[in-house]
Image (cartoon, rainbow, N blue to C red; front, top):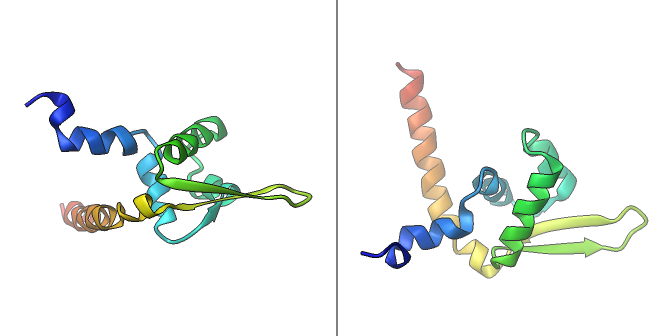
Length: 106
């Protein structure tokens, strides 16, 4: 099997990145403003967070909505394609929680 034929590679091409899975996890709870994401992911620099949000937007996973107010407000949410990731991320979250419990028992 060639690497380009691998469906996991196709998936990872969209969601790989240090903070992309974490961004997607937080957006599973609903729309978030940029400032909210910064507070939820304080380890990510503003530059990297912006870059990864732009990549997710470019790949059709997120939509960026700008509200023209005096203090410009930007909000991110899933597109229809982004919503199609929800079952995979739900399963990943469930697996992660089970692993956290298992590790806490060691």
